[in-house]
Length: 79
Image (cartoon, rainbow, N blue to C red):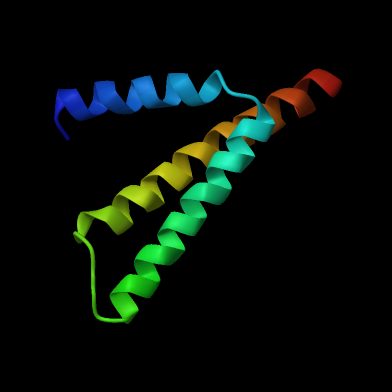
């Protein structure tokens, strides 16, 4: 992985960590809808660029990671 990609992902995570839970859940729903649409397009014989599915999956993973970090931070502060 190139340094450019690593820096870009770090910026993406920083931006995600600045959002609220509601905003993150909304973004997660949008990303899942996008992933579903890509799957349906591929199934109907009109696939988009092949890298789009992997990108959507990676974005979903990043959003879920930030949500889990927030949950763990809240659980740790309550204990």
